[in-house]
Amino acid sequence: MKFESQAVAKPYFIFALALFAGQILFGLIIGLQYIIGDFLFPYIPFNVARMVHTNLLIVWLLFGFMGATYYLVPEEADTELHSPWLAKALFWIFAAAGTATVLGYLLVPYATLAEVTFNDLLPTMGREFLEQPTITKIGIVIVALGFIYNVGMTILKGRKTVVNMVLITGLIGLAVFFLFSFYNPHNLVLDKYFWWWVVHLWVEGVWELIMGAILAFTLIKVTGVDREVIEKWLYIIIAMALISGIIGTGHHYYWIGPGEYWLWLGSIFSAIEPVPFFMMTVFAFRMVRQRRIEHGNKIATTWAVGTAVMAFLGAGVWGFIHTLAPVNYFTHGSQITAAHGHLAFFGAYAMIVMTIISYSMPIMRGRPQGNPESAQKVERMAFWMMVISMLGITLTLTAAGAYQVALQRLPDDANALAFMATQDKLMPFYWTRLVFGLVFLAGLVTYLYSFFVGSKEEVAASEKPESCCGSCS
Image 1 (cartoon, rainbow, N blue to C red):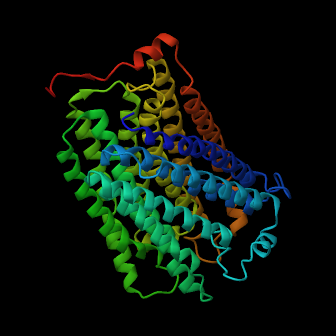
Image 2: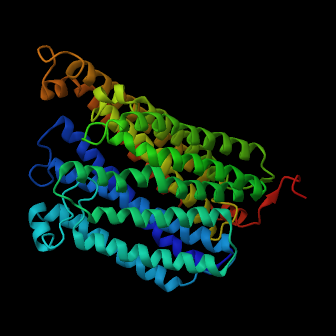
């Protein structure tokens, strides 16, 4: 570890992984409730379980992004973090607020939660992904401001690199667009119009900058490829991602009431969105082929390349499957949407967080060459268990969605099945999804276990300085 202040990333990563495990557990509860409707009712009804599942997703990824930032920014800026104590304080504030919010969902009726948190003074609750009480949202803004101040001051006093500039741009965009969560107009069309300015412009806009910066940093470290080469690729990828992603917001506007021109803008620019993800895949493979060092942490390279491939499949291919307006007319809100959402979030964001954890956590534990080989073998097994099971979940939900459309939406009104009758027909798919979900949980447990694998001799070997393949002299 180059700078002592990078160690503040460790609690962020540990807490992120704990929340990730919680998210998966609630995902399994939801999956079982699709099959057994009154499972855990009335203690954890479906709406509460889903709310916890999606909120944990957002919060653990934010913790992961913050940890990644605190690790890579000092190294990129070639200076200590501006204020390590502020980073530690913000961790405890954010962790306490997040934990209290989730417990509020589970222990208090949502209407009562809104009342006791004075939501009536500034109503912001009740919208999907943004169910947090207003006071929690205010806390998130305070944490974000402190976080960006700390990171920004670090960058200002140190070296300015493309990786840091792209990263801070994405982080500022994340904070700015979250402010639209406070705008809750009575007009439903207006509400949904600006709701997407948080949800879409996060995951198909500024988060892609964060992902690109973390991926570029990791590839620089594990391949030794010239920084200038990686930076040129990064510029092109983020430019394409922003242009297509921002205007591509229109694919959410098809059926909520805005102008008809969004049918064209949304379709055309959404069709372009897979391009930067394909470029990211080519970029990752090319950098690995051109590597100038043989880094001992080979599994971190696997995660980096896997992120690019899975992001292309989830956000690119599965996004394109149902993004054109004439297709989306039939598939909107079907299980195809769920298939895209699961693979895109996992491939683009969960995997990039696990990439930087896989690279940096061993270094923070005094292992510059990564975890021992035996631990990396276990982690590689975990990698494939999670990747294959997520692909299984995605393919299962895609088939379920296609069947749902064929039964419920393509036939005329006289021949279309009712919603619940259609759900009964989809039960085999839901059982299959549940099985893949259990495999995914086993993969996550294996991943966590890998950090504790290795004999004393293997750990000692992993603490040696990294070797060079000879081409970098």
